[in-house]
Amino acid sequence: MRNFWLVPLVFGLVSPLAAQELADDPRASDLRRQIEERFTARVKEELALTDQQTTRMKSTVRDWFLKRRGMEDENRRLREAMAGQLRPGVAANKDSVAKLTDAMLELKVRYAQSFKDEIKEMSGYLDPVQRAQFMVLRERLIERVREVREQRDDSTSRFRRRQQP
Amino acid sequence: MTSCEEMLERMPAVALGEAQWTKEEALHLAGCVSCQAEWSLIQKAVAVGSQAPALDLEKTSAAVLGRLRAERRERRLRRAGLLTGLAAAAAVALVVWSRVPHHTQRTVPEAFRIPVAELDSLDNGELESVLQDLDAPLGAGTLNSTPGLGDLDDVQLERLLRSLEG
Image (cartoon, rainbow over the protein chains, first blue to last red):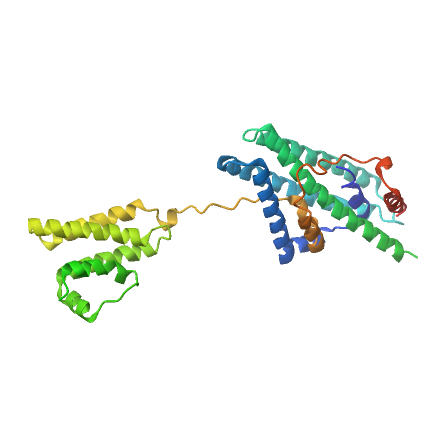
């Protein structure tokens, strides 16, 4: 998972409100749709999915998407809360920070477990090579998402340092 | 002089809007009870067909027309009454209709798209950046492992140092 969770944890850059704005932006929706469509086309092509496999995969990925979307929301809320606790010059509430830390670590485990469980579910209709191909393709996509998030976090932190006296 | 046979041949094209009745045909239709009944049946079959996109109008018309022709021949032979012929033709139309999928029963295949929850937090520029990198070959750069400090170049180390200081 690299430091995907760590950097936003420290800087708390994406607030729930900002995330909601991104979700409501029609251009962003269109881009997400394009990414998902191209990713899906790639998956279908690489895995050479049959109609039956496609139908079953549709159900699996939809279920796990909903679970992970919930985790993403939860993660944003926790990061926001943690950033509030760790503001410079403000004494942090130790109990709150401990609970937030536990919750973030627990969420991180659940997030990783979700991929394991999803792939396990796919073992009912995909062969090992297809599962590996899917895992590689999706891991690469998520890795790219992490990279652009990290770039954003990095440039925002530089901006914040420049703002400091 | 237009015959009932010629009228029957022309009915599907007119019903589908591909032709129009000539004056002579219109006069014949106005005065011929048998043609009126057949015309009404074909019109109904086409109207029903037009409500179902999966229904092939030409095939439906041809099926009804074929049955009407057969019925006409039979009628001539048996000298049967108009009602018998219409009943048979209507039955055929119903059979044809019942064999085609109805509009409400059509199942439009839902597009398969794998949703990615992680995209939700990206803005437009970031999404475009991800979109551009989607087509890399499968074997390239797969499953990056967590890098150690020794894997980073000078610029990356400086960036890391700055982030830790922040």
